[in-house]
Image (tube, rainbow, N blue to C red; front, side, top):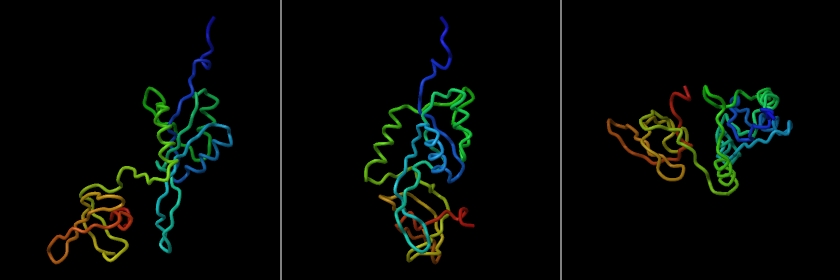
Length: 177
């Protein structure tokens, strides 16, 4: 007796790439279709010019996790979701994410501890200070130091000075021009 190929499909977690800033829309769209989805969020400081508040933002901007067996019908429903781009994979097909990784992420975002992802600044990048006593001064990013703090070399009067400031107070020059 031959098995139907759909019977052999195993439900696994996959990474779904979304359009920029469409993570919540994709999350809601998939949930409405009764497809299991996970959008890990963390608290971050809002960068609004008039006030600084803590908001919930995606831990991995541009991505959500979806649990599926990739049967053709469900795969199409996932991709047809507004804001969905594609399921991440290689030439050989979609790549599942180990269940343990998803469970770990759920534990991480459930707690009240702050979660920091890979740094947005790279050593040697030219940055400008956008807030605080050094606002408007350009410098070179050197390294991260502690929780939300960075070390930047500032050139003044022909000499370099190292200052420690909040990461939120600097921007990469290429991103603001």
